[in-house]
Length: 468
Ligand SMILES: [Zn+2]
Image (cartoon, rainbow, N blue to C red; front, side, top):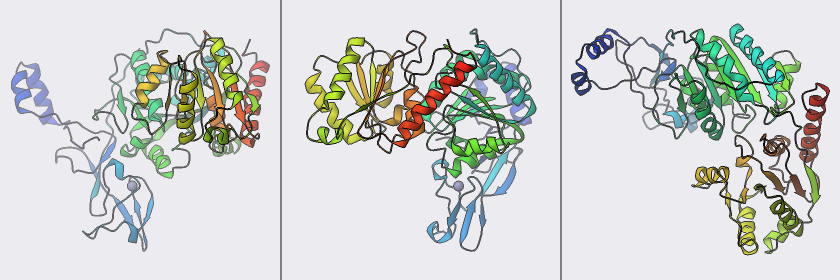
């Protein structure tokens, strides 16, 4: 958790820094304690008197309801009553408790330095990527809004670099945010490598302490502490859980932006709400239907497996699954098996251990404490295959894999989930195709819609001459 320690940017600090420069370094470190200035943030503890801050109420009281100013959510007064007589907000409590007898202290953003030539990326963009990259620069310059609808494996991150560089050169503060920790964690080393002179801040529930930075990567949850902070905010995987239906997180994005700011959404599976905004001309959209390696998206094949879950519950492995796995082993590439329910996945793992004695594999879910290590091991090629729930549907890249979705017609596998899962296949230049099988006992609407969407994107890419 980030503490609300404060650093002064005042004359006192200036004299401290001067004392550093004049050789009194040791004395300074012995006597001073580091206080971090939280520019563009609202904190719960009152900053020192010489800090420039604005005091604001933390809650707005109505007759029966009370609204939290930080996350904008309403609570029934009778449900959030404290013994002290005050009310608290349960919606954003993970970020420190907002109470009606406390205040919020807003420390306004400062003028950021103009940082030129910060981007060290040496790669080249395809012409389609270049067009979107230039569009992003324009959106940043004009403080407008954009939805980048790019298929899985399109190279979205690379398209951002020029825009981020342009923003930093204008002294703008940039935030990259995602509902998924995995996405933030995977983005962080890539952004650090491309902008080596910037001390990038990574913020999520389990990350370290806050420090002031011009370039921030954080979960959408962490945005709730920011206020009028960012000139540019990029929301990656905007349709992912929990952002998609969480009003709190939408308030976080809105409040973290300055009045004049650019907002860029990235996704391969935009929600109906976003598409509606585009149709009503409230949001501009650019589409990239092709992958960076210019090969088409892999289309799923459907295979019927009668009552597959009953077979597993009775201690039997569906024959079709064994057949497909044998085929995958013969191909010699690693693969993922997506399961809709953790319990079924655990049972299946035990059954497979009895059959594939010589194969190296394991199972991973959101409840797994070794989740990060197992995912890394899969990435490093330690496993022949990995069983997983939909936690690995997005934000992760394993080179050269094939994929089986067992029980693809289960309600947990929505159209977006199936498109994202399909997008794990064929991402690497070294294996641009791969096998993708949906095993089911009755085609769902989501399965059909996902397959149609993948085919539609391939068609669009072919028409625009973006794939070979
Ligand atoms: Zn709140």
